[in-house]
Length: 411
Image (cartoon, rainbow, N blue to C red; front, side, top):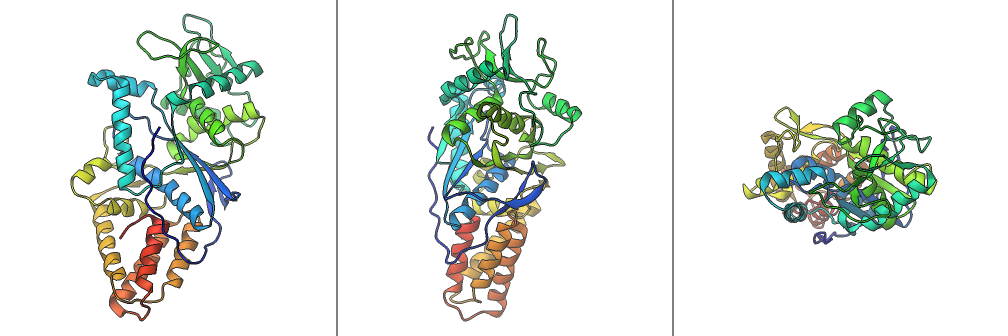
């Protein structure tokens, strides 16, 4: 599947400290230590609706990770999926009277446009679930052979993963069983499915039903479960030693927990990824922004209203990536004001020395992507430049370049 065009990333003189990120499973900030090629798998969209600011905030988070790695001299192997076969897509297509493939293609195209407008660096591999059916089938076969999965008896012989197949299950989220069961039921699981060994056992392969798409497999025609598609895509495209598994905090359980468990049980590994990184939720009108609630602020709508993508980006970066936070007209107004001020300062013929502010921006971003402090440092430089001037004729362009390369904001 085609991703989107990559914006150019300029090179900033010098080098910052190594990146440190909060690891969900360890509950602490610790160093990310990739090799020469840094690897990252981030869960993509289910394309039944347009890109909202919650999506944008998540992909901006991992865009910043990507940019810090590039600044440190790493090659980056970034993979992202598209869940283009799932119940919400079918339900929305039925509601709207369109083919599910047509709906998916339309929304993926809109997502690409939004990501390009926001200057998000594209993944090296952008993989649809429907492109990875052979890899999913192979993974499920291995789990069945090892006893980590089983087939339910009945009219629809679905294949399920045993939640206790790995002794470390639950380490990523750290949740107790009661919390797991609640979230499992709220987020696509089926704890009450008859015939399961355990309420937490997760669907690997849904046997073919009338009116649903299906693909052949040795265990019967059907389609992938949600979690196994990501395990299969990440394992086949990146393999062992994944540096970061990323996504929104609402994916910690069950999606990321089971994705990791599927891969671990087949590989016999203790950890699917070295770091589990999760972005906070974006709210609007007092609630988390979600398709089910309908309280969405769409990137495409803001763009159609004439809002500059750079302002959207700055507005989302004004809060820390792990914090749940609200979007509001005030957030956008402040982002626009910041954008104007930065442009005025970097447009001056000379300014204060840039070395210190660039070093501090790098330092703050390396410390768990502390964008509020990074933006504040740049605000300080801009204030000094506009109110007191400076004598360094190279400084404005250097700051402009750093803002572009490290924050992805084109002034």
